[in-house]
Amino acid sequence: MDIKRVAIDAVNETIVMNVVHMDYKGQVAKRINEKMPLAQVKGFRKGAVPKDLVEKQYGKAIKQEEIKKVVDLALERYIQSERLNLLGTPLPKFSEDFNWDAEELTFEYEIGLVPNFEIDLEAKNNIVKYIVTADDKLIDGQVERIQKQFGKAIPQEVSDADSDLTGTFSNEAEGINNTTTIAISAFSKKAGEQFVGKKVGDVVKVSTKGLFDDDHQLMDYLKVGHEGVHGLDVDVDFTISAINGSEPAELNQELFDKLFGEGKVASLDELKSKIKEDAEAQFAQQADQKLLMDVQDFLIENTKFDLPAEFLKKWLQTVGEKKLSPEEAEVEYARSEKGLRFQLIEGKAMAQSNIQITFEDLKAFTSGAIRQQMAQFGQTNPTDEEVEGIVARVLSNQEEVKRLSEQVVAAKLLDLFKEKANPTTKEVTYEEFIAASYGE
Image (cartoon, rainbow, N blue to C red; front, side):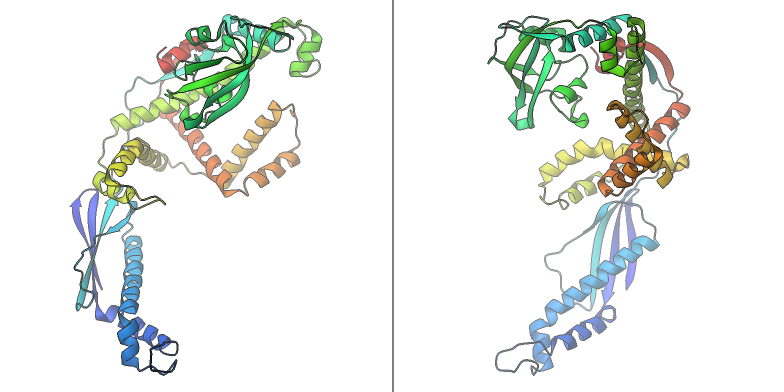
């Protein structure tokens, strides 16, 4: 068998395979012999059918099956031996008048190659690493919310700006259906005005765009996944089932103990200090996420390389349970191109910086995440044995391993980008951070 590559351009090639009779005749003969004791032809006893009749009835199908096996195996081995770094999988080029009886059979496969490129992580940029602080306004507002949350509920007939509403957010097409209790003050100023003066049973139709000052709150109140939060712009109905005002709770030791555990907070100043600490830890995670997204956008914009676009659009038509039309594949490619580009950049960055993910990395990350979750539920000092048991159970699930591995990669890349990209550090309030993030 003769196999060669024909270059079309830097990222597109064709693999051409010439198959001759000697490549498959032995296996075809073996299959015919295996078929003879089982062959059934009218007029002959089972197992007594002449070989020429067996070949006539079954030979063509057997020949095609064995040729395909030979070609598939040779193609796989060739790709491995040539160390081809492919995007997608090879696509056979079909010919309607293909002659299976020819002395020499030619098979062609289109392939798309991962492009060669370099990335400059230290290139000049205008990326900002935000240090988000909790100012007095935010802290005082949180104290008020705590007093309201733990205060005495007072039913109201008509809502006002200080009311708490219980109701259900719904949008059938988007799969949104979540019952929650929310303070009108939690909405953005403009959106909150739409909920004032309402009664139980009223339905308020609002847009998710601008519903909150921070889009991440859609995750809490509408149960929208993180990947769907940014830029979500659909209408949702909020059906009101209860309206309550509240009598603020007293800021006393009983409340402090209920919030943080016995004796851990003993005064208003300590309460404010704890709120500041917890808020800024959460803000740091959001700031890191923005930094990662900003670096991604910068690298995608400034790292130029060609993709085998037309090949990938054809390939997209063949994968998945539902075959795509050319038009659908065009849309899917446009949707996924940016992600593919960063996936390649990400791999290059890891290779250039010799970043590797070990099982110990995965265990340590999972252990930290579990301890953090346990602390949120009041288990602040779990034993190592308890944590290790949970880690073992989590990492026995392949889907969890994949998800956590992606998070470990993201964390390592974030550290790399902080070091190499040398972003400008800027201290801001949370309101200023939201404005920088969403242009509001």
